Image 1: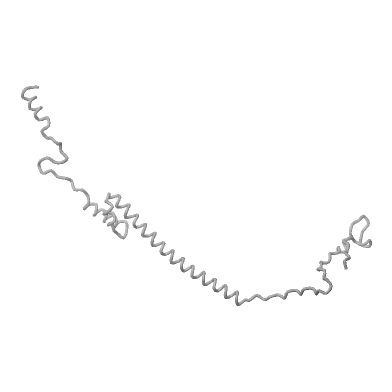
Image 2: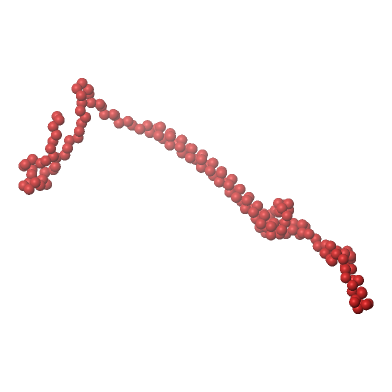
Amino acid sequence: MSEQQSETPTPAEAIPGGVVNPATPPASPEPETPAVESGEQSPAAPAPVEPDYKALYEKMQADLDTTRERSVEAGVEADELRAQVAQLQEQALRDRIAAEYALPPVLAALVQGADEAAVRQHAEQLAAVAAPKPLLGAGGLTPHSEPDPYKGLAAKLRQRRYGI
């Protein structure tokens, strides 16, 4: 059985000039079969194994449950992050408005309000309380006045009297 078929057409199938007759199909090679040694039987083809649909279904259900749990956890985490963002935005608003009114950090931390208008009003009230009061003189020397009010007075009197 070691003979091989030749793929050349027989003379009856050939057309003069070396062209194969299109009416006859070309010979197809036979599939090779492994050589069987004497005394051995050919291995049996494995029987098709049916997939375990119940196990596949249970695995998919477990994966689905895990995905649902992760989705709930992600939703909770997203809500926490949204709350943190809102809190930071409110703090930034309070800090910005406190800086506009030049409040010291101790008072800037006390600024409160539900919205921007309320925060601005509260910061204005704190600024009015915390603003330095102008120093009023008591009729004498004030810290803002000239240190020696009599400086040059003697020179002016001499110039008047003696013309010097």
